[in-house]
Length: 332
Length: 290
Image 1 (cartoon, rainbow over the protein chains, first blue to last red):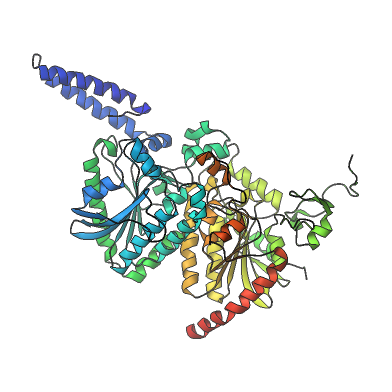
Image 2: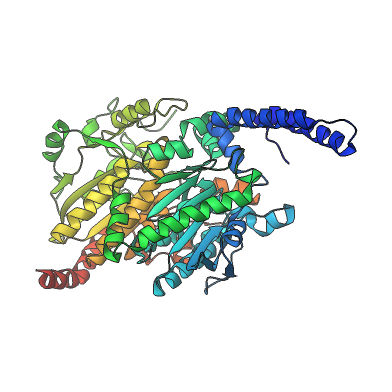
């Protein structure tokens, strides 16, 4: 098990537990009571640590190297899954995966960012940072879903869309913009789940849907705390401050009304019990697909657009209007 | 010692009428370093008379350049608020206040309705001088309201983009403006109303990755920086020098994401032509819907 810095008390307890288990295996001394006590202590320590996570700690958890990724969830949730490749225009992006699966008897089209599980695969997956063809593959699959009236589930986990020369040449901005435009009018239910990192355009490029969920220990924001720190504070060292200022945690996002629901993770985070996490996610998805499928298509799209149209905070100042309206252009 | 002497001290223009172009009587071109008078620059559509460099200008300048004469500002009553109590080196409300004071504007986009070649047009133009032309809730809402207005009155929409991207101080609210503006544009498209997206220097980040790239017609000023990621970020990521002309309008046109590039002196005429050519479709739809 890999422990993060703030999990240090836990790490020590687990070390003790391991030692005790060795002693138990030797079978000379009965330590079962002590083990039970220690396990209870681990549980309460976990509750304490995980009950008071800061924004930055959630960011670290969302990047935990043992955290389950898109393909893990899909394979756990589906009895059958066929991965579909390619954008039919340029190539097959490895940072966004997708395909068609059977989840609890229901055919579902899945799309999601995919990170690698080891150094080699991380490179192969480009660290979950997609190129335009990734977003275009996602759109192709969503259009497929629309044609055959299948619900779409997108799983989001990216540090951002890839900032590279080729990505710009092939229109990264256009690919992301086009996806949002098409997703707004897609005539099937769309459910988006932030399963890890939700960074900016790279996330929202497959993130416009009827319902948007966040797993408990994830983040979603307009920029990563590191980049925010480097731009606004002009130094990489203020990432913890930036993480707080950005209000990027699931509870913050729910409070702002920008997501629909938080999906709780097993105590200690998704990586401590991935199978259980997949079960919880599947339950949520099934319930939501059933509910959304009952809504007539036109109404579904109206609701979707109205939901996004209502996002934003501003105020209206009345007196300034008249002054401004009286000021008209004079140039001939 | 310079060759030229300033005749009048200080800034003569009232803040209200201030142009985004440099102040004073003389203008030194950023590119060719040639000096020219402000009047000459202004008469030349804010382009350098010797090298045709398009100087960055503001929303009001574009309104003056494009509209036939009078225009009416709309939705100017909307104001940004600090919903997150965002503090970096400065609190967000202070940044807003400073931007309002500096520019005389109320946010990074202004919407106006007027006529071009006697045909109605709504223009939403961004100001880079207002916190880098960043998109927050007010920018998103003004665009959304402009779209509703265009649908109701059946008037074409032109958005002039000039922005570094999303406004970080509004965090996820600003991110959602990408989804909001894109979703609203689908309603305009469904209503059969043309949307002209005009990209100027610079158009990057969340603005290029939403409404700026979604025009029925996408066109740009010469040599404008247009892209998703900023050049500095790309350079840091790939640790290589970027090719000459990378992410400039000509590059973006070459790769198929722009319909054409237009010199500022031909802008008004081209917009008029577009309006005339798309007019019949707007009218036909009107006849059908009524």
